[in-house]
Image (cartoon, rainbow, N blue to C red; front, side, top):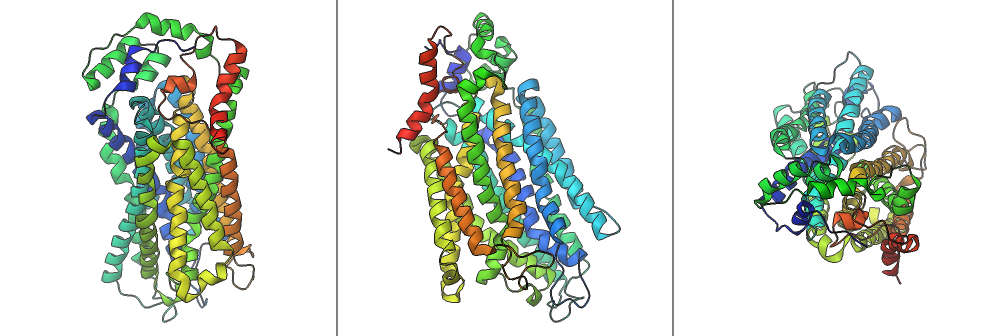
Length: 544
């Protein structure tokens, strides 16, 4: 049986959409814009790094990063992100969302700049310093996940909460797009200023010395949007749910929200203190009570995010190899170093513009109408279908008359990843756990996702290699090939559908309803067990 909600929280739940909602979306969203730019821009310049630092005189093909170096450069930020999600997620519940928010942003700004200024006297030295700074960049990015989601969920009204959280995450699409556009502009400018022959015409001259500035400029640019939003992040008040339910300062929570909502709010300090005394608001994360109430839900959010990110990050990180196979990117030896960056950037920008960005905003538009459960289920289903449709007749798609069809199908997998589980796995963990554990549980769920991203980033660099050892990239052993990799990814997406059954539907409910923080403790245990199981049962019943 539910208790009466605190007035300050009820006012937030029922508030009309107004300017401060959109301000919060932009401030939190610019962090995600930076996150995506920093995480995905590295895939635009890895080929260039290979040409600059691993050129071998007389080699028939341009230099490439050795497998261990390529894995480190592309994956080290993901390892840092995983660590940051766990650490800052926990810290956000201990110190407050706002305080930790500023720390993560400073870390992102400093490390974005430092990544572009990576130094060393040898290739190993440059790669080592680049990896060092990208790890700490990832660590800061990791904190942005649980904090942005938690802040937005605790600011939003319950009617449009899903759209607001999804809009913050949708800025990731613009970050990916911006990475491609910046790379296009920089590479086009350098290509115009420094003419160079193709590698097969003159191997040594195909990479001009000034090409070393290109990847540095692209990586450094990620600091700009983060720096622009620092002041506004520090101006945001702490969320009322943290201030009232965790810090137990009802007066401050009411004052903060009265200022942004322009209404009078009763602090209800006595009610806050009474709530704090309830056993339902005191159990720890690693407790039997948490496992009983939220264990299945945490398994659902972690497993679906883990499976989704295996597929999502492997697609992003080896898609340039797919583009080469279908002819969008010419053979490396037929281009100079700068032109190769331009062609890779052009291909990724087109994919982002046509499928990645629209998918995010479809989720924003429909998440509070269709619901999180059905969008996630639909997304995993169509990702499975399109992966298999690409994989089984793979030879058909590589034939020149069918290449455009391949790109369209490949784009649809990105569209339904973003109009699907890539957005909902971010939204739901911020809605279903208690306030005092919300940031921590979101961080755990997100870290599981990044563990999947690491599997995708590291594993598929090897897996997507040709089964013929004479056709693999230099330094790589034979893999299972692109076709079998796509089949494997289709199976992973199907597993994502299955684990979605464990995730409850928060549409239209307050955060306290979903977390059961406002339940009376005199409810019979059997009834509590039924209520705890109800969201999952409801989700499962959708499939009957």
